[in-house]
Length: 410
Ligand SMILES: [Cu+2]
Image (cartoon, rainbow, N blue to C red; front, side, top):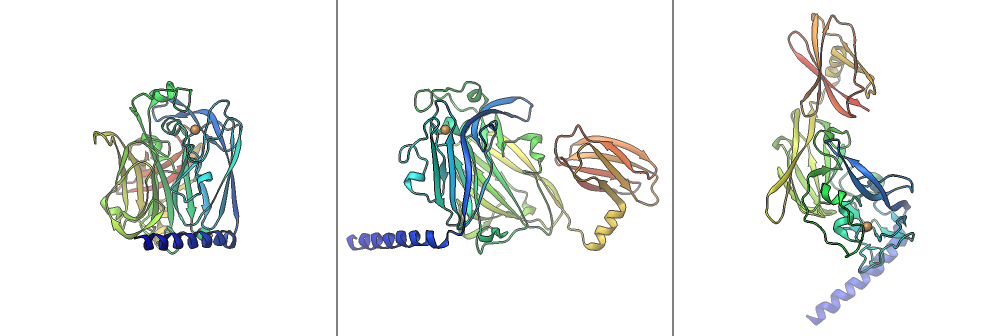
């Protein structure tokens, strides 16, 4: 036993030496970023109400928002995150969750130190391997995280290759969903005395968030998944809430879990349900062989009672991959311009033999938002200024069939 521990100590020592040498030898570039702690602001929720926030920001004058920006670095980067406190009286840190950083750079106020008002520190670490990580404030954890001090940190493979990790499975498109909850009472009654001086009220979240959004806000282009049957989608999932988040994928997506907590799984597995506890991250590959207009359902579960406290649905739209010939035909049938559009969208119909047609504008949830009836084949100009930005579907019903085309509202 004793011999074994000496042996391990020896190995650990050599590994440390090697990694120190490695650090100098392989650090190709220095990735620098600046984070301000903390600014005030507010979030607009799906029901158009707002909640007060304080969060990380990336310039001094930027109002708080949630979640923080995705910090994207590359494997092998030496990462320097310059952190400046702009708080009058609050203490904060940046904890690099799941990353192998040393004690001083850990951002745990107990083992490292908290940033006092108007102090500065540069958190440094070497991005040793690709993966999905979270950065968040580690002071008065529960309250500061709830107020918005969190974001994703993604280490991409070397050369930013479109693979889950270096040598890992490849993909065509990638999305990231950072999930959390929001208890409005906490935001309206924020105990300003930080550290341990306040009594935290019982957590009763009333908003359930994916990238800071819920309900109809989830058709936003950064969150809703749009891909073709030919495309492989790599979805990064990360939970920075206090509940367990249960992701239920439509079976035809063939959801394959490939990595967990920033490391490849020894063996990937196909699962239509993925449960993620606070702080955990998973990487999931998705591909459907059929066209699919559906949702990924997310249940937000209280871990003590196992009760589902909230459910959200993120739209997913997989379109049949069209060959070159099909594409030309489609072009002849319906044209949308400009796409993306800001205020007006022009629809040109080139179907022969059709005199009248109806146009429906739907969101990715399939809800009809507009309906128009047209005669003849002239282009139809429609006013879309009132639509929130996101992805929509223009559906044109001709005499015998319906054709649809997606467009983006900026
Ligand atoms: Cu903080």
